[in-house]
Amino acid sequence: MSSTIQKRAARKTPSERAAEITEAAKEIALEQGLSAITLRNVAGRVGVASGLVAHYQPNVDALVAGIFATIVAAETEEVSGLLDRLPTPLEQLGMLLETLMDGSRLDVTAVWVEAWTLGRRNEALAACVREQMDAWQAVVQRVVETGIAAGEFETFDAPSVAWQILGMVDGLNAQALVRWDGVSDRGTHLARAVEGMVGAARGSLLPGGAQHFGPI
Amino acid sequence: MSSTIQKRAARKTPSERAAEITEAAKEIALEQGLSAITLRNVAGRVGVASGLVAHYQPNVDALVAGIFATIVAAETEEVSGLLDRLPTPLEQLGMLLETLMDGSRLDVTAVWVEAWTLGRRNEALAACVREQMDAWQAVVQRVVETGIAAGEFETFDAPSVAWQILGMVDGLNAQALVRWDGVSDRGTHLARAVEGMVGAARGSLLPGGAQHFGPI
DNA sequence: CTTCCTATTGATCATGCGATCAACAAGCAA
DNA sequence: TTGCTTGTTGATCGCATGATCAATAGGAAG
Image 1 (tube, rainbow over the protein chains, first blue to last red):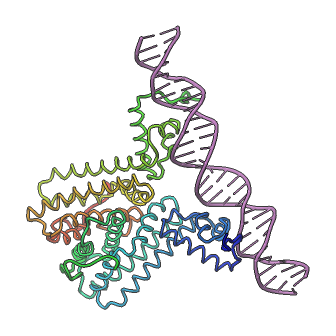
Image 2 (spheres, chains in turn red, yellow, purple, blue; image 1 turned 90 degrees about the vertical axis):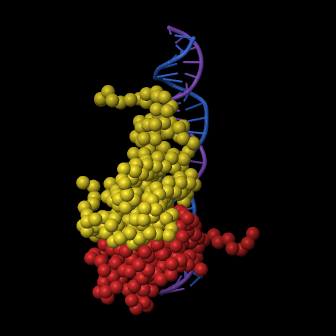
Image 3 (cartoon, protein in one colour; image 1 turned 30 degrees about the horizontal axis):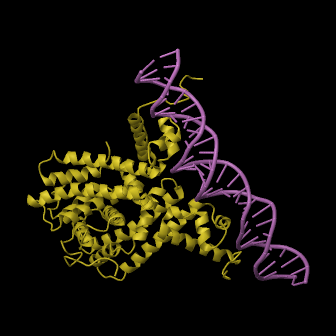
């Protein structure tokens, strides 16, 4: 009835179309998960034939791996950028925990968790997962090392502590994916834990006892 | 050529056959993941037609959910049983961390991680996941509460701390699924973290500085 | 030995996936 | 206007999944 019925998609520049496809796949991954990235699914969202999506990618595995890297790298860079604005490592680490635990990135967490499983059968994805984990670890390690140098932290093994912090954050966020209720003061408890690990004084990472967390 | 070729599977008691199917599905889940639980895959391992597997289960989603529950509940009970042999909450918590982090249960960890994702599209599985998480949390919470009562721990919120410990363990194990190397003394660092969270003295949970972890 | 219950088969259907490619047509260049 | 490059289509193949069910045959009961 309406005139919005398009028989054929408008012809576009390869780079334009590639960007559209990437964007659509990214949205699908965040909304429905990485495994929902399908030739037909992506094509449908772009408004294009499935063959075209295949035309722009070597194969679906590579597309999934690329989308994962895009989503996660953006998060890493964003948080890393926030760190640079803070003067002391104590504040940086506190903000890091607060930001990662505020529940505003659960969609990204879901992507992480699914990638851990999918990486078992998608070698390209597995490589991306390792790479992005390393990138994250480097960011955290830098904060810890700066803190040691500044005398704010006291621990013998910055790299391992960085891995540990990441693992804890990921696990708690994955948990939140399934269960929100029952856990109060996630941030506060984690802060106590990290203080113990990093050798900082109790209460030095997050000041208040009952902090307010959660989006808005 | 050999006489081992069987045209038709031997006729068995429904309960016997059901047990075989359950066992086969369990093995598949631990070896190849929950998503490898397939009518044909399970049937092939049992040596039976695919229709028979379907005959013994309402649908595959239910089978997957049931197998998840079986695997995870067994782990919970096993660890819970180990706890009862130890006298003090401090020792119990230490053993808990040590056991869960020794890398001998990575196959179960993989099942957990996959269940978190699959639960998104399998409601029966999602319910099982929540149920089993609650069971685990109850075990840990009991240890923490006993510790508080005994004056060994000092924290204001045992339920949340229990959730937190579980989340940390899960996250670190999930990490180990992808990356073993680069992280030394996982158990020691986690012990420090939990000490901080639980309000125990530094070094009270795990004595040595460099503990030996890992399967044999 | 015969009967009969039922465990078991295996073909079948509908669905969805990735991949492939000859054919088509949009739009720029001449 | 004409011609040609190339972005785009959509049908098609092979494969895998879950589910269903009439037909078969094992084996205990009579």
